[in-house]
Image 1 (spheres, rainbow, N blue to C red):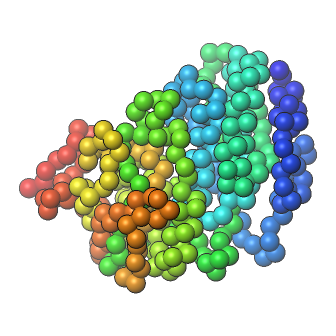
Image 2: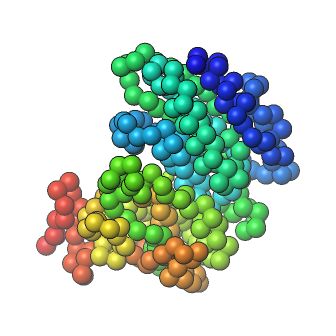
Image 3: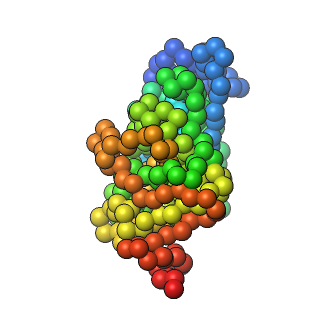
Length: 306
Ligand SMILES: [Mg+2]
């Protein structure tokens, strides 16, 4: 198939996109209806063959992951996703493989629909065989959650005295490509909304963990202008992960969040483990300790500081 034909085939294979889609794919822009006065959030994320997925990963894995990565960012802000756009840059040999490209499109659409998100637009481009790697992006639009007064949870809200929590487990997400966690994770969109509903303003700051947990905690600390003390040994690990990999592997797509003094966090919510792993203090940066001893993470592993 050629570019135009592929887009037409994707359009024809679209199911009914639902009442929020006013202008479906086919025009220059798609259009979704928002509740009056609603604020709109948008984010975009990419997957690159050989970087975020094995170069020979199946089309379904690419389609699912590109959408779920963007949905994970929506979860990080405890918002409601309302629409998605997907682009793909295909080598000519994949463009001519109808089965591959349509399976990619179908998987992306189904990943979005799992969260009632219409995939209402996108683009396809090609490059000559051998000239690069397959790349895809997903743009997700989202709105604040009206059930919590339209509040959005940012990275900069942590204060000294808050506690640090994580959802789920960490490390070894990229192991066993084709069956690893990074291919079948569920973006924590619903969990984030539940947490926000339960904790309200006590959910002070949040981020999703796509890079390593330690570095994401660093972002929270920097944006909030606080110091965060992390109990490395308390971080729940995925099968096969040691403490170092749990903190540095990345691709976990879990939530990392801070909770103010009034907030009570259950040990589990909707079947997802919630674990207290640290405290927020005055100062800056991340201070890690294990069994009461300060540790630092470098490329080769733990550095036990004296
Ligand atoms: Mg993120």
